[in-house]
Length: 215
Image (tube, rainbow, N blue to C red; front, side, top):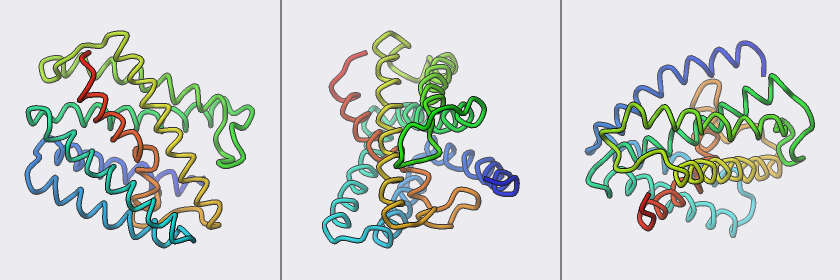
């Protein structure tokens, strides 16, 4: 990735992240509109990328479950936005940790499916979410209903793992389709599907855990 692309990526993140966080906290129809628009755009990106009808249907079904889980995470638990923010934080920091550690330490490649991924990046993808989640609990201790326990540490690592798997799955289909990005709607990032690839399975998993697991 060249310097120009890195600058675009940083600027896009600076603009988009505060807006997304605001909408998550605010909730209401604005948040629902964000979910609906993101679902349709990412579904269109998947439709363009997948080559077989079976994969097209399966992918859109997975997107439906994922975005429904986002809605439930925001509204299910006494309308407490911190649950969704926590999962989003783990997924984003997983991505950042992998990028920073992978580029700084480099080392052996993790998989041929996604050639840029390294073992050092994988380690960073586990370490940074743990750090950020701990900080999250310091600032949101009055908002969230549980504490940073060993169970929460395990939860953080599992969500990070699932996020990394989701990233690799989408990378596989991009390579099969011989494309770099699923779209170009976000400067420096690509399409919406490029940004949420690691979250696709993480949101449904987290929602089920929060429903059935008392921390």
